Image (cartoon, each protein chain N blue to C red):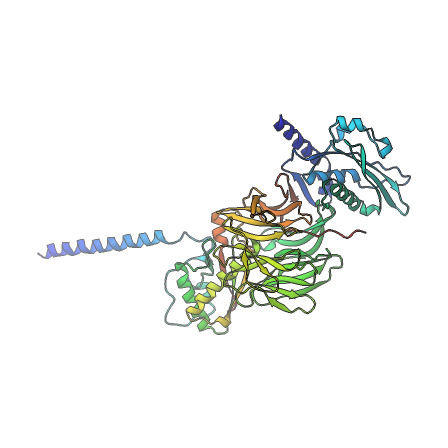
Length: 174
Length: 443
């Protein structure tokens, strides 16, 4: 009897573990490909609700280390995977009222340089809005658009273009 | 038969360019030019070498070869190769018409260079219609030795105008931006060169990106965008003195400058309101007048030749398209209805043609919209795939534009009928953002 129950429990637990493991591995697969630089890691964990950020956290906190936000072609909509980063950077701005950041908006090389200046600014504004929606103060944030003038990658292919469609979060005062 | 002729013609043209000007250009660190298309319908012209007949030192410039290269580049002419020039007349009295008729030449240009005192030279030239056995032009021009290229370009302009009835644009200049190096080590320069890529002159050197050069109508100044203040700003710089003026450095974007035809106003894009809009600045008072007020990105404005309206690009309808609005403000009318993406408008001197960068999917080509016909007609001027920034020559005979080859930028000049295309390549680095300057003032 005991043995039977134990067996049943074990089977159930094993099944649950298995499900969890499958879900977990599936989630890993769905996550974006590993980033080119350690500072660009899309982070899924939520920012700490307790505690106050300090300047040291910019280098150590996994969420705050997300400093590049990537965009789809000709789009300025924030992708869902960057929501967590918006929340923790907004919290940093709240925790450190003297901190300031510049959002550098960029576009890929396709199309007009003039238009891409506008597109880069739209992307910078989208990040700025997301930070403010998460409680950050707009007075701490400056948006600059470089258009397509500051590519990180210079090949004419989609891999490169995807890396160049970005907003870089640069702390000018920590 | 036709194909053979065409191939022969294009190989002759290629040969000419391979032999003559490229080495000279390379020495002067200018843009190298090579022709990538030929025009079998081009008019045959014999440009006979113009010898120096003076007593002093001969000029370092071969005037006739420059004239010949200009005429060939236009796509409208096909010059007779050196080896087929069997007679060498230098004046009308020495011209033997049957010879040139036998060589199937429509036109003949002869001339000679003489001393003009004070180290200057006098170029005497005559243009003939071979079939009619008639002299079309007979002039002399005097210049110092360092201005002999200018003289050659002006003679080419005179020939072009006499035969085609359209003012030549060989004696003009072009502006462009170069970038050399990679990453943060990239160095940028705003350059001005003769329209054939020779005599490059650095106007601005910069460690930060430069873009959007625009000529003042008198050809003395360039407006451009620099990031030297961190954000985009617009400057106007005198090309010869280097004196410059910061004209726009507002919060947000400051870009897309374009002079009005009278040179007193500057159209520009500012996003100080939170969104990129077109403004017109009075350059005397610096007062701004807002022309557009829309949710979309409005940018890259140019004045119509009469100054009354502005052409610009806007994505107010979703994708970027070309619009026209009164320069004084008022509602805008959409102009482009072909292609999912139309950008960077350049307008011809007569206001009848608009060149744009037209995108369909990942392919961006230079397209031209002709408004002079009953219904708007499009033609494609470039093959793609990442072509941008078209700029009309002042006589609208050609369009200069930027393209990518591998990971570097090159410039192309294409005839407005798309038949002849030539590539202007900088020896090291990237060339982009071309702007064809206005006609130069006659001395």
